[in-house]
Length: 106
Image (cartoon, rainbow, N blue to C red):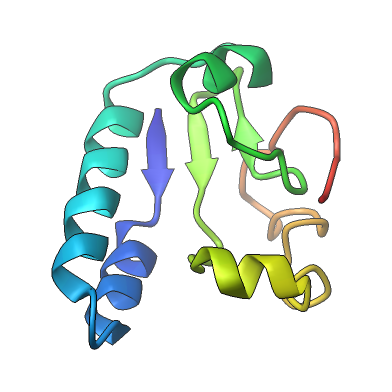
């Protein structure tokens, strides 16, 4: 899969004070795995990451693209304040490929 963009992952782990090294380790492992995997649908992705949630429309399985719009920890995710701000339910900017898959949020 092509991951757009690793910059968001780096920004997240650099912003962490107490657990920056752990965040860097875990997100680097996710990036390496995602970059070398070709998921064909959400079920295939769930075989790799069993606790993954499909949020919005930012994985294009046909073209092999994962859009990283935001990175958050479990506490931030569970507050559920992000759906209106993430942009994950909006169409991609013009000129970009259209991500596939059904829309579903938590």
